Length: 416
Image (tube, rainbow, N blue to C red; front, side, top):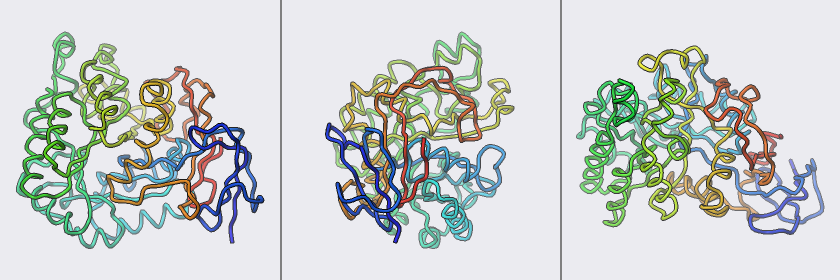
C-alpha cells in the first residue's frame, strides 16, 4: 500500500486550507489523518493534473531534440499528468510494437503518463490506413498524421469511419498543402514587407471546410488541431451549430504572438500553422471565452538550438514550452478566462475530446494532481528547463502561477 498526503492546499475558489490523502494511485479522501509521505503544499491551489493532447516528444529516432525522459519531465514540471505524443517520429509510430514499447518505457520513468497517438496512415504517407484496430489494442489513444496534412479526402473519410467504429478520435493538421506551398510565415503585409513566402489564412480555412464536409457525411468525430485563424474558427462555430461532432484546440502561442514577431527574422517564431495577426489572436481568445474552442494544447515541438538558428527559409517549424503553458495563460488571460474556465480547458476539456472520464478531486478519482502557486512570480529562464529545448520566446519575461508539485498515479512526478 502506497500513501501520500499533501497538506496546506486549497481547492479552486476556496480559501480554507485542507489536506488530501492518496492511496494506491487514487484519492482516498480529504482532511484525513496523514498517511505515508507527507508534503506541504504551502498554501497552493490544487487541481487535477493537466492533460496535454498534442505534444512532440521526438522518440523514437529524434532524441537529439527531445526524448521521453526529458519531455515527460518537462511536462510534469508544467503540471501535466498525462501527455498524448504525436507519431511523426523516425520511424513513424504506425505499428503496435512501437506503441507498446513507448508506453512501457514511459511507465518506468515515474514522470508524466504517456498516452501515444498513432499514425492514421502507414508512414503518415496519406495513402493507406494503418492497422488502427491493432494500434488501439496496443494503447494508441488517437489517430493522426500530424506533421503532415491529409491530402487524400477519401482516405481521411475511411479513417474517420474506421476510427469511429473503434471509439477513437481522428485529429488533423488542417492545412491545404498546395495553398500553403513553401510559406514560412503568415501571408500578409508583414511577409510582403520582409520578402518572405507566406502561408495564407485560406490554406487553413479551405482544409477545415473540406474536413467538416467529410464529418457531415460520415458522422464520425474529428478533432482539429492548433487552429490559428478567425475564418477557420467561424467554420467550426457554424459546424457546431449544425450539431456536427467536431472539436478543436488552440495553442497559447497563437494567442500571445503574432506575425509581427517575424520582423526579427528569428526562426524561434517559425511555427506551423504560422503566427497570424492580432485580429486572429483576438478571435481565438473569443472562441475560448464562448466555448467554441474545446481545449488548450501546446503543440510542444522541440528542436536543437542549431536547427532554430538557421535562417527562416531553412529552420524547422515549432516552439517548445510545455513547462510554461499554465503560467503564460494565467498571467496573460487569467482575469479574462477565470480560474475555473482555464483549469477546465487544461483538464476536463481535453479528456472530453479524447473520450476519457473527466478528472475530478473526488475520493476514488485517480490521484493525478497539480499544486499551483497562483501568486508566485518568476522570470522565465530557459536554462532551467527540463526539456532539451532550452530557449524560449518568453525568456526574461516575468510570469505568475507556477506549478510547485505534480502527482501522477499517487507518486510525485515533479516537486518545485
